[in-house]
Image (cartoon, rainbow, N blue to C red; front, side, top):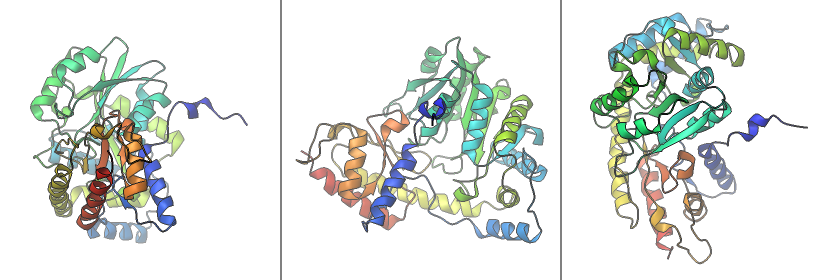
Length: 396
C-alpha cells in the first residue's frame, strides 16, 4: 500500500520517542528516572476536578460548539485581561484539543507551499514539523547560551525575506527556559512594524511558570496586536495535561479560519474539560502558584547539581521546568564501548548507562545541547543527577 507523502515531511517527536524508550526499559524491570517529558508531576487541583464531576452530573455530555462553549471563551477573555491586560472578545477565541492542536490550526490556516516561517532556536520540537506538514519552509534563527537563548532585533531583521509569512516563538521557552522582557519584545515589535506581512505566533503555554516576575506578551503592543496569535492552554499552569485543552486569541479572520479547519478535524473539544476550564481560569490561582514555588525550589537544586559536573555549560532558566545545558565538551569521548559523537549519542548513553531519560538537542534545533526536565520529585532529581555524574565520569 502506498502511504501519503505527508508522512515523509516530518519526524516523530523526540520527546515522545525518548519516553517510549524509557517505558520499554521499565518493562524489563530497569529503574529509569524520567527527565524527558514536559509534564507537571502534580495532580489537577481539587476545585477543577470537582467542576468536572459537576459537569458530568449536570449532563454536559453532548457535542460542543467547534470554537468552544461561550462561557469558556468569555473566561479566556477574562484571564487575558486579568493576567496580560489584553482585550479580546469571545469571537477572537478558539478552544482546541490541547495547545498543540491550536498551533496546528494556526499554521495550517496561515502557511502555504513555500512560505517561510522564522523560528528562533532552540524551539519546541513540534514547531518545525507543523510547518513542514503545511509545506512551508523553516528558517532557523540561531541563538546562543551566551545571549540567553533569545533572538535579537538585528537577527530578526536579517531573517525576514519577501517570502516570510510568520514568526513563531515561545516565552517562557521550551526547552531553554528563556523569558523575554517587555523591552526585548518591544525591540522585536519595532522590526515587525516594518514588515506588515509577517504574522506573529506567540506560544505562552508556560506563562505561569515564570521565575522572574510577570509574563509579558508581545500582543500588548496595540499597533501589531492584530497580527499576533496568542497560543495558550491549561496543561502546564494547571497540571491538566491529560485534559487536552488549549486556545488561541487572534483577530476574527484567523479565528474563523481555525474554526473552519477544526470543524473538519475534531469539531469541538471535550465538554467536561471545557466546563472544568471555566473554573480553572476564573477561580483562585493559589494551587498554580504553589506548584510554581516547588518548581522554583527544584530549579535551584538542579542548577547546583549541574554545576558540579565538569564540562556542562548551563543557562539558568527563567521560566518553564527544563534546563538545556551545552554538553558538547563530551563529544568525541568514550567509555571504551560507546563513543559520544552528538547529542543523540549523549542522551542514549545516559539512558542505557545511567538509566536517566533526556531529549537530544537536535530535536530543538540546537545540536550542542540536551534537555532535562525538573518536573519530577526532588528525590528523583537528586538520584538522577548522581547517576548522570557517575556515567559522565567514565567518559575519557
